[in-house]
Image (cartoon, rainbow, N blue to C red; front, side, top):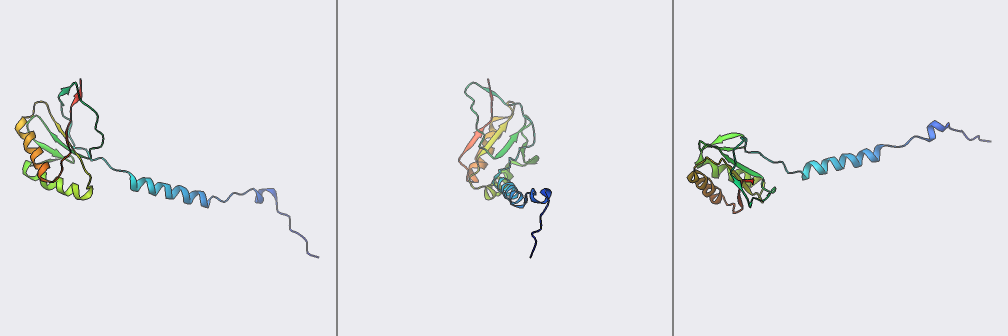
Length: 134
């Protein structure tokens, strides 16, 4: 007669962790792929105050203009004529992109308009100008 081999309680209580690790790994990949990374303009500006300012967190292209009229994109200085090419490159990466212009309150209006014109020429119609709420 064959005898049944009795296993100890420690061997029977083991839990297979492989399926749980597979699920956690798949979830991690999903969250990494679906995350949109925000590209900051690279400088801090003194934004003008506005009573009717509203939050628009959906912009993913940031352009900053400091008080001297220097334009920054992705933490580097950009010539006004090169704004269009940079925006077109970013638009190729994210076709539904929106632009947020963060202009210093002492920046000249003409420079802000030139930057907005370059953004429109690149094919983006959704342009927001950043302001602090009063």
